[in-house]
Amino acid sequence: EIVLTQSPATLSLSPGERATLSCRASQSVSNYLAWYQHKPGQAPRLLIYDASKRATGIPARFRGSGSGTDFTLTISSLEPEDFAVYYCQQRHNWPPSFGQGTKVEIK
Amino acid sequence: QVQLQESGPGLVKPSETLSLTCTVSGGSISGYYWTWIRQPPGKGLEWIGYIYDSGSTNYNPSLKSRVTISVDTSKNQFSLKLSSVTAADTAVYYCARPSYGYRFGAFEYWGQGTLVSVSS
Image 1 (cartoon, helix red, strand yellow):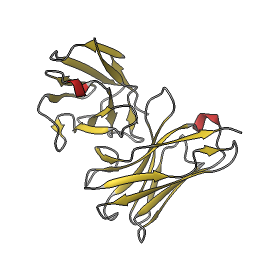
Image 2 (cartoon, each protein chain N blue to C red):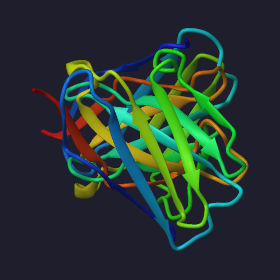
Image 3 (cartoon, rainbow over the protein chains, first blue to last red):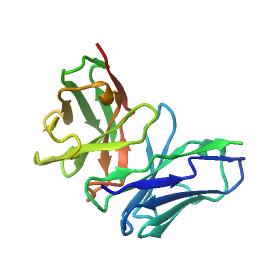
Image 4 (tube, one colour):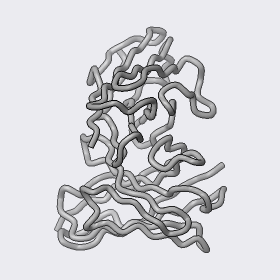
C-alpha cells in the first residue's frame, strides 16, 4: 500500500496569507492525486483531482501541483472559510489511500 | 444535485455485524462506483470498498474477509456490512461517489457521515 505523508501536521496562518501544504508518496503515483477539504461535522469536499485539476465550483485560489512522489496544494490567500483539515489521496495503486491530513488553523 | 445519506445503528456490540445503508437522491445509481470510506476518531480516512451498479465489488484487503457491499438499484441504495466488529471499527462511516469514469478517486459527492461506535 502506498503511504502518503502530509506536512506539516498543523499550519497556523492568518486570513490573507498563503498556505502551502505538502503530500509525499512512498512511491510514484504519477498524477493520480486528489486533495480534499474537511470541516468538522461536514462531508469532505473534493478540491483538486489528477494533481492539478480543480473540481467543479472550487475557487481559483486553490492550486494543486506536482507529479510522481511530491505534491503541493497552495491556497493563495486564505479566506475565513478555508480553515479546515486537508487530505491528499492517491488512486494510482490499489488500494487507494489517504494522507493523515494537515490542519490549517487561524493564527 | 446528487445527495447521499447514510443510515443505520449508531451502536454495535463487539463480534456483531455493522450494517449501514446509503440512499442516493438527485441522480441515478447507474454508471458509478459507489464507495464506503471511514474515519476512526483522531485518525485519517480509510477506503473500505466499492460496488458498481452491475454488482461487481472491490474491497480493501485489510477488511476484505469481513466486508460485504451490496446495491439495490430499485431503491437507489447501496449498503455496507462489516462482520465481527471490534472497538477498532469505531469510526465515522461515509458513503461517497467518485466523478464519472473514476473508480478509486476524485470522490465528488459524500454523505454527511454517520458515527458507529462498537461497545458492549
